[in-house]
Image (cartoon, rainbow, N blue to C red; front, side):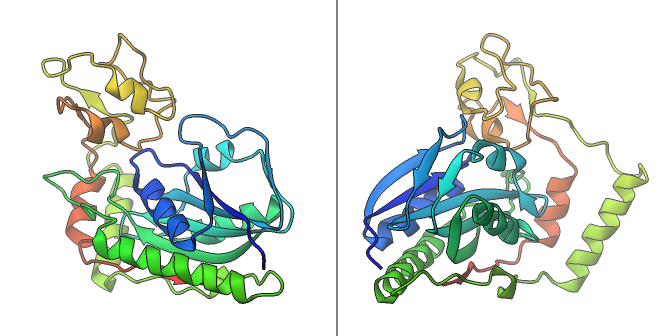
Length: 274
């Protein structure tokens, strides 16, 4: 196939999806373009059969982040090859990769490669690390190798060859970890655990009103001049504001964090198909 260019399309509040997408795309060797839908809906963009799309999005609760799909609604393909990538926080990616592949198919794209990579969990912190620092050098090396494999596949093919995402085997957590997590969910439903926070909170003694959180929020849930408050009805709990606050003024004390840190600390590898 004669592919002339590669475009990355990312929704990446904390940067992990963006990092993997660019690593994969650069390894293909095609001329590159970047579309970032983290803060705004993509314009109506159309792609032909001689272009490659690398789409990377985060997983929230075993599904593609809903806002990511909303922001990509105007993408259009014409039998356009696509690489589907999801980033999850080391627990489970569930239906997310199949969901992304189906979404792309409905828009005229053909998934020629798919991958699930691990990125630092939104709820990860110094106290409760969850896949901290990922994607790391080993993840990026695999992303590069995979991107090169995508290029070899497209160069060798006379016609577009889709992959069957349903054949991919998700890395499994220990049975006890899954059992403990299920018990935690039941305790939440029965009101036996700490109530879930609706949005990050701010320490007014630390907040300098620098506006970084306003700029980082993909949902527009924080207003300049009123950085102490977050609109819970808009917040998607990505925790970009928590991770990016230079003063360390913001936090998200969710009861999920200690459970995820304790039971899902075993490193999971990326899984790919091409």
